[in-house]
Image (tube, rainbow, N blue to C red):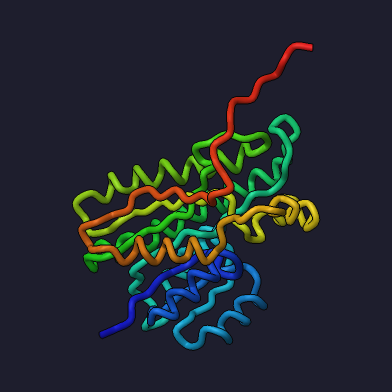
Length: 251
């Protein structure tokens, strides 16, 4: 019996890396993408021959299409796509936003997800099996200060996941949207543009979610009976809850 295959974007850190480890441990093959060749090489040395590293940017459409079209034998028939690559950059209000940061978030969080999804779906439908797992965020349906464009891109992921399931109704392809809350990864270091002191302060005296927690959730959702689909999964650490309303009082 041939091994199942999961394609993971953003595999060089955090959720992507831990999910790759989890699936390799369970006997799957893993195709992992990222933009940092050195980290891909390290992961390949760790995970062995069932891990195929691909160094490219999911935001570049022509490159994505070419990569999927030229996957090597033994890695062509993808069972699961994990759209995990994502970016949150900057901490400015919209009126002072950096439009280059906006472009990068839209390119990765929206376009990259769309390109990869479009490339894998025909094969999944033809083979009669498949699962699209999108990593969204609680920021996609909750507003917070200076989360403007990032939150909007994750709102797109939330709604696209629902719409995708409508398109795929009657096919055997499942769609799952996983929305983590406060999660300890390199995410905030990127948002704060390398300011590790500020990013790590956001986790002080808290017990946030870990990449392993999300990897386990991906594994669970993928391995349910074929007639079941976890359409939407929101995960928060016990130290986090919804906030109240914000008001601007007159002076």
